[in-house]
Length: 279
Image (cartoon, rainbow, N blue to C red; front, side, top):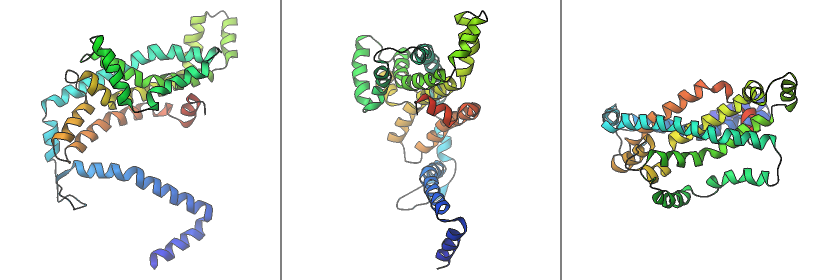
């Protein structure tokens, strides 16, 4: 077979090790990008009936429908405002905690850091139901503040672990030199420590922002129907309308994430993220 001959020829050209690396990379690309390509295809499908693999008709029918929804713009605005508030609140709470964990050694420190994994260690819906009962007693159900608190709980691991790793990477000798030169503790923190830990803090903030943008279950349980975000709208579109309507809103939801990642891409590196998780 011509294909088999070409494959063998390519195998001998690149060598055994590189050949299998390329094969594994190709498999990864297929599994990673194929669902995204399928999502794009469905978003522009005016008519799509099983068992066809390719839609019978392409167009902008469902884009016009989704963009014509009066609640769409308000849900986009709510999602952005909520994500910004959650990021700020999470930074105010978690960055000082991350600095303390990085600079001070105390009994139970590792156990305390592992405790931030608890919100991700089991299905979140069980956690949300427990929190929902507490929020009901505190009159936080259906409030913006309640949704912010739910989102902050989900972001604590990222906003603590990653900045903690960034603070650990700042040499204490530099801080001591600044103190010897006459700088106060606050001046040392804001002029030496904080700027050098900035990449890790930015990465944690990006994870927090994007996590808040895509959070749906907690928002649905605590905030609905008063607080409607884009992911909550997506749930409604998927349940009430044809298969091709949901991908349109999904693509709209992806756009802010891409913009944020492009704006802070210089801070997103494997070293920064791995330092935060102690790898």
